[in-house]
Each structure stands twice: as C-alpha cells, then as structure tokens.
Image (tube, rainbow, N blue to C red; front, side, top):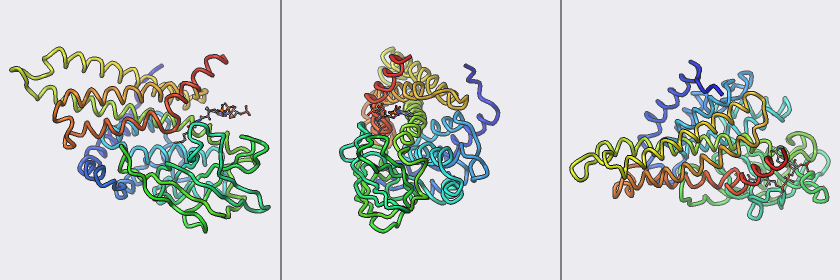
Length: 380
Ligand code: COS
C-alpha cells in the first residue's frame, strides 16, 4: 500500500481545507443552532467540483479517483459534517449509482445537473419498518405498463427537502422478495409526492432530514435504474461505496476534534503549566492520534480498493465500523480535554461529538457492518 499522495491529490486536499476554513467555519455554529441548510455553501461546492467528484467530465463531473473524494470528505468533515453528508450522498449514493447503472438518457438528463450543484440528489431506501432490514420494503411500485405507481413512506432521508432528484427503492413484486425490488428516479414536484416535516436532530443539524410520502405517484418506466428487479442489488452496491464516504466523514470528525484538543491543550494552563504537559492529557492525545492514524489507513485502503477495481464491500465496511467508533471516542475525549469549555458551543468540540454519533448509524449501523464483515470472512 502506497499512501503517498500525488500532486493533484495534495492540491485537492488543500482546496478542501481552505474551503472548509474560509467558507464553512464562519457560520457553522449558527447553521447548527438554527438547523439551517447550507444553501450558499452547497452552490460553492458545486462550483469547486465537489458534488460530482468521481463522475466523468462528459457529464460535468471532476473525473477524480475515490481517494481524492475521501480527502475532500475528510477536510470538510473536520469543520462541518452537515455539509460533508450532502457531498457524500450526492457523490456516492446518487451520482455513482446513476453513472454506473443508469441509461445514457438518464445520465444526460439527471447526472449533468447533479455534478454541478444545479440539482441535489437524495437516496431513499429506509422506511419506518425497514432500516437495517432493507429487504422488507413496504413502499410499492406497481407495474402499469409504461409506468409504475408508487405508494409508501420513506424515512430519515438526507437532502429530503433540498433535493430535486430522488432515487427511490420500492417493491414491485412481493412474490419475488428482494428480486422484485426496483430503483426509480422521482423528480421533486411529481403529483402525489409530499415532503414530510423536518427531523429535529442530535447532530448534523445543518443537513435537512425528512420523511417522504408517495401517494399514487406516476413514475415513467424509463426512470427505472437497471433491469426489472435490480433495485435491491443497486441499493447494496451503491451503499458499499457510500460507506467509504461515511468512513471518511467519521475520520474527518475525529481528526477535527483531535486538532482542536491538541491546540487547546497547548494553550490552557492548569497547575502552573499547559495541560498538554500533564500525562493525563498527553496520553489521551497519544491514543487519539494513534486511533485516527489507524482509521485513516483503513479508509484510504478501502478507497484504493475501489479505485483498483478490487472488491471493496469488506474494506469499506471495516473502514466505516472502525472510523465511526474512533470518531465517537475521539470526540468524547476532545470534549473532556476542553473541560467546561468543551461543553460550550463556541469551542466546536461538542458539535463534533454530536455529529460523530450518526456515523455509527446511517448507511448501515455498526451492527450491520459486523454482519457484512463476518459474512465475508466466514465465506472466504
Ligand atoms: N453487492 C451486491 N449484492 C449484494 C450486496 C452487495 N454489497 N450485499 C448483498 N447483496 C445481494 C446478495 O447477494 C443477495 O442476492 P442473491 O439472493 O441474488 O444472492 C441479496 O443482495 C440479498 O442479500 P442477503 O441475503 O445478504 O440479505 P439480508 O436480508 O441478509 O441483508 C444486509 C443483507 C444486512 C447486508 C443488508 O440488508 C444491509 O446492508 N442492510 C443495511 C441497509 C442500510 O445500510 N440501511 C441504511 C439505509 S441508507 S442511510
């Protein structure tokens, strides 16, 4: 494994770092407080090419590798995980899925808008009773010849109200189980498509999370992704890549919290010296640094597996499982190192701690990652 970054990757990393510091940091606390979607910031990320990073330039994408995408995710997440989840969903779950499995017509119509930020995408798999158990889809897409009729409810959808293009997973033929599931492209404004109220969340409060309700929504058949019955495999394959993005988000949250704690520990004095000089704090920093470095190796390895066209189901699941635990542990320790100040919003670490939690839940909980990992090692 050679993790020496190329000149181009270093430039992209620096661009993301500068953007996060100059554009995201100034109002991140206010956006979190008010649960305000970062509309202007998303536009700018579109201009910088962060929204269609791995997409071919013929569809307006940046044509970069997964490792570059991971570097951007890491830098954005150090400062604002609400922004980085928008980037992750748009890149990994929506653009990648459409580019890899969509028809040329779908790519021309939808992908070109998603890569520039003119439109944002949402990935709609979870339901009130189908989160981890993703084959138990209750939303139906009944085949009516040249179109499907979509009925049901989706839950916890990132970009729920700000997206324009929704990839919706639904059951067409219940008899066929997961082989009777389809993935459909639904546009905002379709008759019968309602956006439910916004969730009031613990973390990533700047991203908008909604339930979505479909009441007899007509979806043309040309909006189906892949062959009839490909929807569940589409969701699984797409989520495998999505997990690398979320692992990178977790890595960034951990690294961001660590950097703040390191800086603080060199400034704050107690018992006549900077607190970093106390072994109680220095050892915490040592543990944080070590676990972040280990997480980084797993995340970069998973990205490289994808770039090298190796199977990345296992490496992506391991990266997400481990990096999300590191994010949670490191963020809690960063708050501890900050003491009373850590409990106050101005110091940013309490937000990072709240944001870290979701990385152990979405795009497959830690328990689901353990299912994926254990099945893989027991099969091989
Ligand atoms: N790539 C391609 N196909 C995959 C796959 C992958 N990564 N993972 C599973 N599949 C296929 C299987 O090969 C199987 O197809 P066949 O019957 O043709 O062999 C099919 O999908 C069903 O798989 P399986 O039998 O393993 O299904 P399970 O119900 O046991 O569930 C898990 C598998 C738990 C891994 C799956 O339901 C899952 O990932 N759940 C979490 C979903 C999730 O991330 N939710 C969060 C929502 S997005 S925020």
